[in-house]
Image (tube, rainbow, N blue to C red; front, side, top):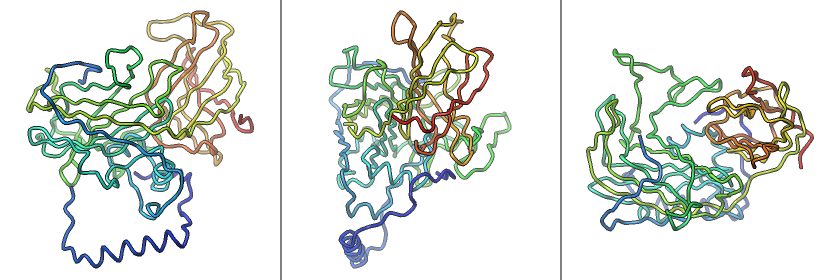
Length: 386
């Protein structure tokens, strides 16, 4: 997915050994004389009885050094790129670091697939830091009519081995990728950057199918306990029954169970940056941020907690960032949680995922939305790295 903030080096310098291995690999491919390549309203934590189903056990291996695989671009699936945009170089960098995993590059890719009732689902791309996990799954063998929103009857996502354990809970949102992404200003556009079109009845035209006829379901999961971490954890993902979402509710079209165990990477790309800045117009001081290329946690001290108004508990929220070149990304954060760390309400936090990958070194300020008056202020963070 195009992204003009080209934050990682576009070129990777490879050793002679790597180049030699790569050339040998291409020569083997050339000699194969091959004619063609065969391309190939959820409810969180709903439990159900089922027949024995196949479970694909998937492991994300941390990559400690660049190998011959670095010569091959490891592009994320369209669903993942539509939900958290990244340049080709950013995708490669996060994949080589071990924070992201592209399963199509796995030699055992076909063995990871689960097929039920003629429909095959397989993990496509997974990206993780200590707070958030982004997981996309490729679906083949199922389609819906144009204008119909495909989906699952239930999706269960939990960490650990015991779904009944309160520590297994995660916050989760999921969607069938529809070919629409936000542009730099946050406005929706199609993957190629073209404007959104509508049917005669006014409903938005959505493109769920890729060119090869497959679809992708994308999940964003995050910790419930603000002191928890997802690094190295086992994530269970269980899909049940395919169909379509209509105004009247979910219409089941096919029964099936597709279950996965995903071992998340333990690679930690987060950094702590000391801030110590008052948030203008509030009684909050932004003490520090714990930030990665895909999410952030903001810690506040509070001299006087504001009165809560329905769902508004008065905590300022980071919405975007300012980069060194002056570029403002006002709609960066997407999903997460805010809260007070204890009953005294003297300390607060915000956790948020992103809509695009960000280079932490390029950030000079945070764009913060205050609760009072919905005013946006900028908090400088440069030269205060801890």
